[in-house]
Image (cartoon, rainbow, N blue to C red; front, side):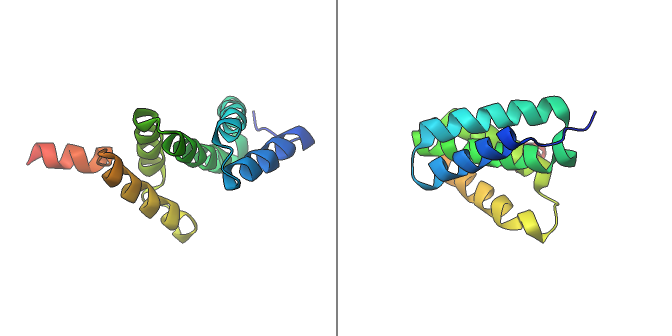
Length: 116
């Protein structure tokens, strides 16, 4: 089943992005969580929106000091998009940078290091 975005979904997205860019992280987190769960259920847009929401959830948790959740979402985004086209590479680089700062090495690199 493919999800067709409704006006409500676009409104949530617009509001979530607005809250995030204005530093209202708790409200942004609430809306991105709703959008993420809707995208997960409906397999929205072949995964693009879901990946966007994973990245935004990581940023919200990061800004709120929820380090473990931020690391989990950055790792999830990294594992899904590490080989994505150039459109997403800035977010991939940012995820890796934040993981390094937060003390969470990307899971793929951690697995490689452990096998050495």
